[in-house]
Image (tube, rainbow, N blue to C red; front, side, top):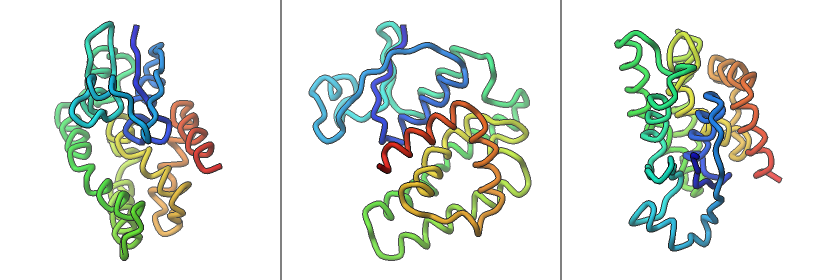
Length: 194
């Protein structure tokens, strides 16, 4: 049985929840209080005890991007990476470059001056990519989309980022929200906003 050490507010955990839902993989959840991390989570993922951590019948794996790739290989259907090697590489490159969005997102969360403009620039860069293709993974929804969605949802719903100036990004988010896996994450974020 798969166990996910999870925290609803963590967008990295959201990546794994979305992939598990997309692949209809049953799993158990162990919630981790990020404000008071138990010592056992530090033992599972030393030294900081970060989540998510996936336990697949005793085989423990941290780091969301790695966990998502693992799940893609362990449960290949439905595929979340394109069949074409070049398209797969392009999707992986976007996941690799995720820090281009992550850094300004967390700077804004910390309330640093100029952070909203930096995050807006990162969202505009995604908008430019999405003006040429329906999904970040290419022709179909996949792991590159999963890598970015939790932060875009949180930027919009928790940080008040207006997506009106990024119409391709807003359309992408609307298309993705039609998927039950993403709709469930939007519900998680809505509960966090209360």
